Amino acid sequence: MSNTITEKIIAAHAGLETVRPGQLVEVDVDLALANDITAPLSIEVFRSSGVDRVHDPDRIALVPDHFVPNKDIKSAEMVQMVRQFAREQGIENFFELDRMGIEHALLPEAGLVLPGDLVVGADSHTCTYGGLGAFSTGMGSTDLAGIFLTGRTWLKVPESIKFVYRGSLGPWVGGKDLILMTIGDIGVDGALYRAMEFRGPTIEGLSMDGRLTMANMAVEAGAKNGIITPDEVTREYVEKRADREYLFYRSDEDAVYSDVREYDVSGLEPQVARPHSPENVVPVSELKDVMIDQAVIGSCTNGRLEDMGLAARVLDGRKVRSGVRLIVIPATRQVYMQAMKAGWIETFMSAGAVVSTPTCGPCLGGYMGILAPGERAVATTNRNFVGRMGHVKSEVYLANPAVAAASAVAGRIVGPDDL
Image (cartoon, rainbow, N blue to C red; front, side):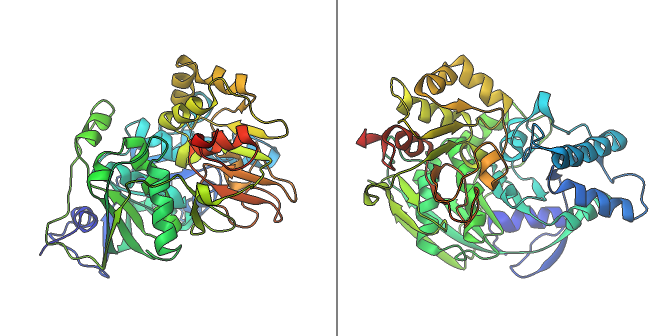
């Protein structure tokens, strides 16, 4: 029986030769992860089981990243609970200030997620790791506690949709624009509980940062996971990070898909998702005089080194418009340090931006950039629902780092070519 890449990875971790969509299977989990918001509940459920030790501390990663450095007493208590649990259980993959980063940028960077892995996280954007050719998906904290106990979980095998992209991308267009365009096409429920398999020459030409961005937002289309076939770009990324074996899977040529979508992306403009949905997508040129109060460059979607470099190219020699707040948040310490060595941090600050230590921060309305009533932001984050970044009467537009940087300079939403 022919299988997709998603089906092959699930079958391998279920100890089966093949699986079919809709089948319920029990699988071994290579890595289970949680953050400062989701881990405490998992820990409480784990403790209520009466079991003293987790199944395998080496297959657990705990990453406080939403409210760190701690923004208040409650967040400090949450992180304290996670920190104590990690020490008690001998979980070495606990990443705090000296090793900090946004989990979905940090774990691939650290080599903890590899091609062919099956990864489950108590965070919806765990699907990011599909950019490496892994099967990764988000689950609830209670489900994660079960993995702490057993090292296994159950899955319903998803159907797969194949998305094929052809054409060369312009200098200011990347993975964020491809995934926004796709979500604009199929809607926020267009891939509900399905695997989004991204294929084609355009994808093969994407950097690893761009691939991780695309997989990251698969959940915004309702997908169970997003995934890209690993290749030499993948190998170059992981071989200097991996300290264990990994496997490259690929779909069979005659694998069965529930749908196939093909796009010619030649001439694609930077895309922008208007409030209040990631599917409300238009080319940046269709937005006229949308004034902004704030621009945010960062998050697990677009806080990687390539994103920092793109924003720095736009901001070099320019100034943020008076009255606009530009917040730049490198996704990990390593990204921060590399951006500093490249001179980009100075570029940001000289332009009038503030630069934060790695944190999810404003993406979820946590801190480091909360919007007041009537304020409008353009952000490289992944969601723009009502109240996502602050007050319910604020607005968030989603865009790539070049658009966010250009908009900060112009004071309204524009593409870099409009400066």
